[in-house]
Image 1 (cartoon, rainbow, N blue to C red):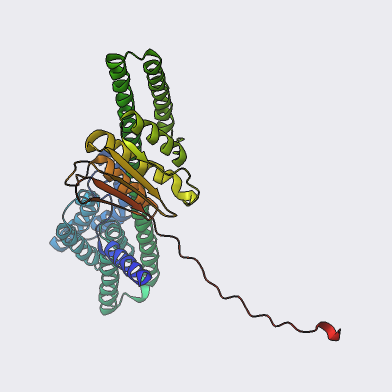
Image 2 (image 1 turned 135 degrees about the vertical axis):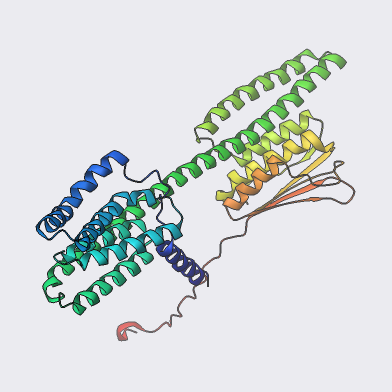
Length: 401
């Protein structure tokens, strides 16, 4: 079903691309004015020179002047077609229809070559979306052939019409190749922008998880050392707490550097040991597991982040006196008996939800009866392939007894 839906979306995208305006057709990609006028005039020389010769060698009659003005108007339309880029589709369709009509009328001028229709068909191939360009060009060729047949000039124009069809097809595929390249360039820019945004979110999330826990633990331990000095004057214990604070600051600095360079890996056992020390310093009773062997190896780093953020929230906001942590193969649960009566989703919980979503898991936070929070992270086990083993019947081999 999912494959069918994906294929359907792909077909719709292709159809939209087929009928949509060219990517990058915003006006800035049009040929530069001065250079295009020079190049366009060079392209028009094989068309204007015979037209001028035809006027000079024929009788000077109003009809011939009108024909010459028609030829010049056709050339001017070819020169100004780049100004249509960035216009509304209706304007471009009307301009293309007018240029195609003038091109067909030019073909019907006595002495004019059918090859001049190429200026209109090539212009349309670049100016219009692929589907519209195909419709206009094919219809224009058919109308020109019908009119030439009606005046008895089709047999002598077959070669020129074949050249027009071939060159128009080449221009059609070239224009679509240019559009595809533009789409790829836009997609690459969007991918680069998304990559930068994703990296910023990763660094922000990791720094939040890291610094939030480390600074909270440092604050708790520094407060404990102050209380020890104020109450009992136990210098050795206060010095020990300050040494641990110093170690935490060094470790936090090292983790910040590793996080920025994406080389930091969280260890679940280390997080349990750190949680035990931080809760002890905050005088919170901790019921923590002593081993993580029952947790799937690929989830230990993710659960380490969950435990770190949950313990940080307990130290900051809960007012709890007891915390219980339980682990399973694919789940982790942290409960406290604090005073929380509602769940407030901050940056930390949102970051954890993103981490768990990356491994196919979910995060649930709820208020316990009587107060306190319960945070549960769970990742479903991968579906195990249960292939039935073929039955084997024991027989005497090779007739041996």
